[in-house]
Image 1 (spheres, rainbow, N blue to C red):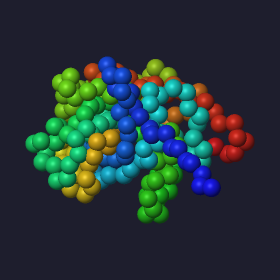
Image 2 (image 1 turned 90 degrees about the vertical axis):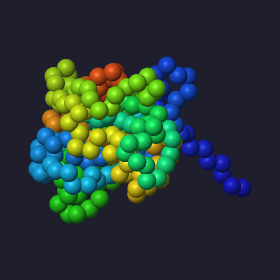
Image 3 (image 1 turned 90 degrees about the horizontal axis):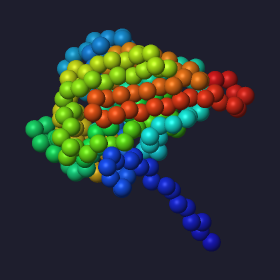
Length: 235
Ligand code: MN
């Protein structure tokens, strides 16, 4: 007899709405703030943006207490503006791109920086450095209909109350409208897609016991607390 398999769909709460936003895919823009590109050792310019992905179930809606991930001794925080797509499309014009947005949130692109550095060195994909379990805590989505402006506003992150990252959405090399337009030339965007729009400078390590709080003006915050693993494995 065939087994019945049910898979819970990942969702993110929406501010002021009873129904949560169902997550289909998570696309992430790499090196989208000049200062962060420099701190990662590359030269920021207007070469085309690049993207990587996280699995939809990497989402941790609302944050909370997380177990420190396996197989890394260099877990890094990256605070990012998250764009939730509500209307799909291909070859979307930048001038119309924001009409495809359902809402915005603040999220964390948690990164196993040691695995990423090794992947870069070997010319390998970043999947396990970026797309691991619980690697994408996201705060509640603010509907775009509220008039939120994704072209400006402070974005920051603190660890245990000490500010580590600070920037402004206006510093994006590829603003939200252009990131949507560019990505939609390569994949058909659809409702449920999330786009993480890159992180400002100041990325750094998170340790077990740390409390990480990302904020974006007008969108509230996302807070995650890490506790040590208890597996007996090397970290
Ligand atoms: Mn990132």
